[in-house]
Image 1 (cartoon, rainbow, N blue to C red):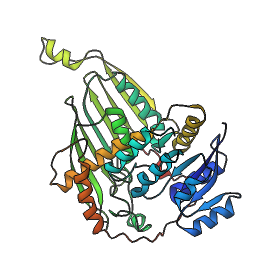
Image 2 (image 1 turned 90 degrees about the vertical axis):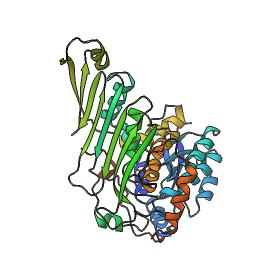
Image 3 (image 1 turned 60 degrees about the horizontal axis):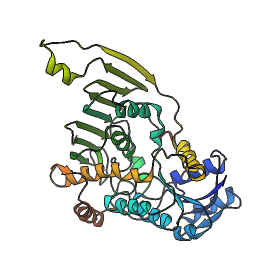
Length: 388
């Protein structure tokens, strides 16, 4: 096989960008042969623009068609259900983030993937950023020793009220399933755990409608504790401008700071724990070797699409395996549950039944009414890329 046919389910903002990219010949070895959406006007426009493409209003019918793979770019609460259907039908599946809004459904999805021979990937496009990849390599290779603490301030996700009003599904419990933690920050939560690992428990404070007239959080702070004693802080918001994007990881043998498109790395000549135990002095200076690395243009969505295609055709290792999607969702579900339960400490894995029970009640009271108002020009917006 040197060419795979793909069907795109959902051609709103993300789906139409993927469609335009692939149909424009930017992904070697992949062609779009079908699209699906409940909006017949979107389907009509796609049919007129891309000759020979099949259109569907029911994703199940597209999955039954002769496509080799599907790309799923629908509202978050439908992600796992459609991906399960695709994988059970033997279709290679690339899922937009997040894996879903509930870890319960993500667990079912991952179990389905275990028994499927299909390739399963997720659109964590920020994993293609060279600075995050470099930080992961340093940390996993022991370059900073044992992690003491990580702090990520990621508050440059500024959004206006117009943004939230542009789609009725946005910033609602029933339509989107949450706010900044489920929409913007999944990329950062994924990178955080990709580099630092999964916490043992989290405590969170999530402020609903702090900056906007919405029913979900637009500001959140997470405090994480790890099994080995490390701690982490994650702060995010869509109400601050210009905001900050700064990741600091401190370890017993060094430190990493990523900010303004630069990774700064201090590698200590001695481990601080050993110095603390063995030194005869009260105050010491530990020598360090300093390095800097600059951000390079990231392949982003196109990189994930090409990698997914290569994985199907030649078995290339996935940059973002679909089963990894549950990790950042565990953190965000735990953060929500912490807030809902009086900011108490929540252990991971999350109690999915407890989370789902409270989420269902919030969805029953949600303002979401299914009427789509936003349209896309079919291009990849800068808002989905890493911004410094």
